[in-house]
Each structure stands twice: as structure tokens, then as C-alpha cells.
Length: 250
Image (cartoon, rainbow, N blue to C red; front, side):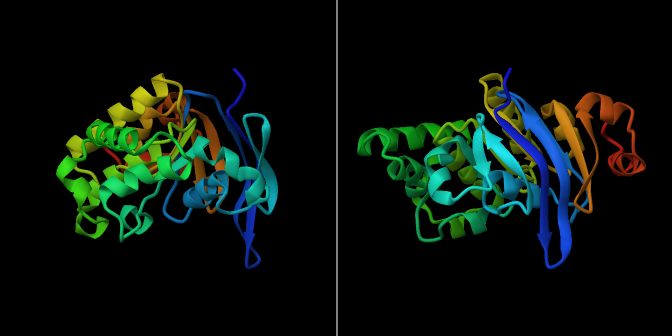
């Protein structure tokens, strides 16, 4: 199967320092990649490069066989719906002056999909799908808990049915029950052909969800490959350290 997204030799130089260097991987439709590493290892930087929010200093990214980055935004914009994101700081990523109803319907309005009635219906369906109580949709983001805000972000990202969903620590604000529901939903998305790029400290979730794994340290890739193999027989001491910090992994 041809890759959905292919990254080759990605590097980002900031203020004379490489915050990311020599990262390469490819994601197929329906495949999930886990990005792991300690805080400051470059996980979020890599996600921002994949999203086209930052342009790489070196390397390139292709989406469905065509250039994605580096690329002028006007040349990338028509394909933006294919790549959507759930950010770690959910509240900061939501417009504070819009209600949940407006936030869920906004992607459909921007991309001129449906009409007033069908957009409202789609928003209600999505709220149920991500277990966001419909009563919360009348509220502004600032009145929501972190978990509710995170579910609203996930619903917004899924409204356009992206080919690739990029997630930065999506379980961090959720209680165990809701985190379990999120993982079930992501597994269902995978089964339906959605590709996932999943950055997380939650190694049990990574093991459950991700087919492939990339370990970063100080912006450099230390190892990558099949998740089960790497977590069962870690090829690098730093991965052992991460595993030992999660005694409930097995």
C-alpha cells in the first residue's frame, strides 16, 4: 500500500540549535505511529512539522504523493481537511468566544459542506460519538473541564473526516474511563482507514494503539520499528528507562 504521508530527513534549526534532526518515517492509511520520548525530546516539534504549522530547515514531507512541506500555504490549503489535529492544551486551541455548537460546525462552514440543518445534525452526532454531553454544546470553552474541552477538540478534528489525525497527548486530561473510550474510538478510526500520529507518554496506550514506534531524544531518533517488538525487546537504554518508569505496562 502506498504511504499516505512520507517524511524524509526532517530537521528544524532554531537559534543555532537543532531541535529536530534526521527524522524519517512513512504512514500508510489505517496505520498508527506512536511518537515517544521524554519532555523536550521533540515530539510536539515533529507534529507541528507534519501539520505544516512550521516549515522544516531540512528534509521534506509528502502527502498522498504530492509535496506538503516545505510549501507555501496557499498551495497547501486545499488539502488541509485531510490532516487534522488534537492539541495537548485543549482550552488554548479552542476559540473562547464560540459555543460548542459553533466550534463543531465551524469546519463544515469554512469548507462549505452541508447547510445549516445538516451541520447542526452532524455536530449533534459528533458530540455523541466523542461522549460530549449535548448540554455542554451551549457553553463557551472557558466553562468546560479539561476533559470536556479535549473531547470537543477531538470532535472538531473529526468533523472533516481527515485521512490523518495528529494527536498530542490526547489522554492527558481524561479520566481512565474516558481515556479508554478515546482509545476505542481511535481503534475504530484505524479500522476505517484513518491514519494516526500519536505522541504520548502513555506507553500502555501506545502499545494498544500503535503499529509503529519512533523514540526521540533531544530531537534525534534513537530507534524506530514495530511497536510490539521494540517494547518487548528494547534496543536502546533510553527506551528501557521509559519502560521501567511504567511498571504496569506488561
